[in-house]
Image 1 (cartoon, rainbow, N blue to C red):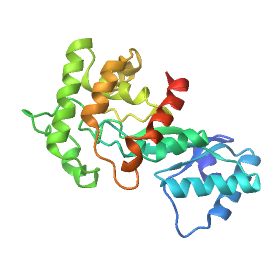
Image 2: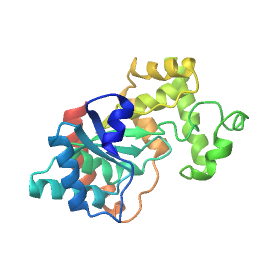
Image 3: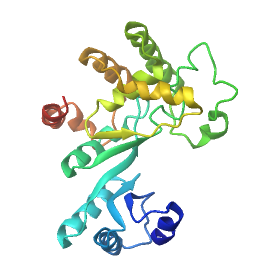
Length: 240
């Protein structure tokens, strides 16, 4: 598959080879060995994963560490103001393992474009009509609360709702980049401007609070305790 990709891309190497999802039918030991061989051969420069759970990713890293194989450097994940699950386990793991997060669907499956709110339903041309059944679930009232806050901040600083949502992500620990799915050139330019300003600490905190949801077991005993405090102090010294 790698050889075929190199031919199709007309290149000698792949910058980052990412596994699209965990394969429970393939031995992780064999997988990490094969990926290591691809890196050593020069056909691949770096390796990463996508949508792995914490234990899957950590097991892969542990195997690489045990045998001296190439470790993963990137993890493609879902993360947004209306999808905060990444922060419970994968963010601390990525920080510990020096993995950069590549965020897919940073606008929550198109729900944070600013085109829909309490008064306006999903636009007719939106892909959500066809893809909502596959999107991570979100309660409408929670979505509207987040959009309300985004619009307040938009009025304060003159940035668009999607720009603010993307900027919030870019300021988060371990986030290396976001994958944007612009429909046209104007949307692309608008999204790229999200890196032209910086939300204040107070604005970040407001968005953190309005978008927060109660974490599941086993994270909730620690989320408001010493674990969170230590982790935040650790990452703040490096990312702020």
